[in-house]
Image 1: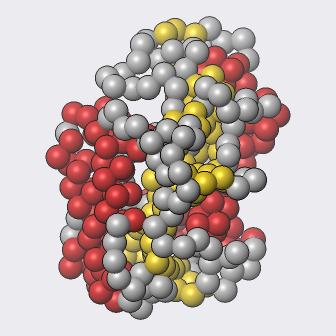
Image 2 (image 1 turned 180 degrees about the horizontal axis):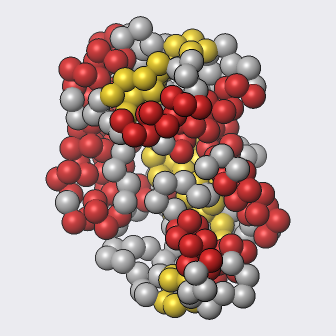
Length: 301
């Protein structure tokens, strides 16, 4: 299902916003976009690529600004967030104000204006959360999913989007180019990975769901060692150790969450507990599949 109507994307000048707009052009969505974000530089850069879009500078923490921006839209994709783990742990109040209070601001604005659907972007870090970032995203999920009102709210839990803002891949590319070893937290750590197009497809899928559901795709994973060998074959690795509260393996569905399963997704919020979906036990991505994800992401940098 393609999205249609007037669509607002919060945090829309980031990697995901670009991917959504690219997909809309390729798939000929019947829609128009408003990009809402706080970076004037990123908006200026995006405007060069997509001058036909509407652009609003603003922060999701500013309820009055958010409410004015949301007016007249049919769908809101809420992607704005603080997401760097060290910064979120060092300044948890700032993380809370953006990821929790900012999300509630967007929700309130959607309900006030009778927006048809709100799709929020969550993360594997929200599952059995151990960091300030993960805890903030879990609270965001709970607030959105528990909402009552005219707006249909659904969420998506992502793994890591290849080469997105803050990704380790550009760092490794630079280190390899300079002939330096790659810095890794732990070579045996595993992480879920998806292409930008996979992220957009998940949003389209979430747009078909009933209120209160969280969609989780059955994605594959790689260990950090396997991933490094694909990004920079033959490079030496230097282990720097896990960051505070960082997990060795990631979860996308926890045993205690009510969950049902389809051929391609897990749906949290329906079914029964007892399912666990982790980066350690899921299928490993073939090197060719990860290279294709990487090529897609880097083609649009």
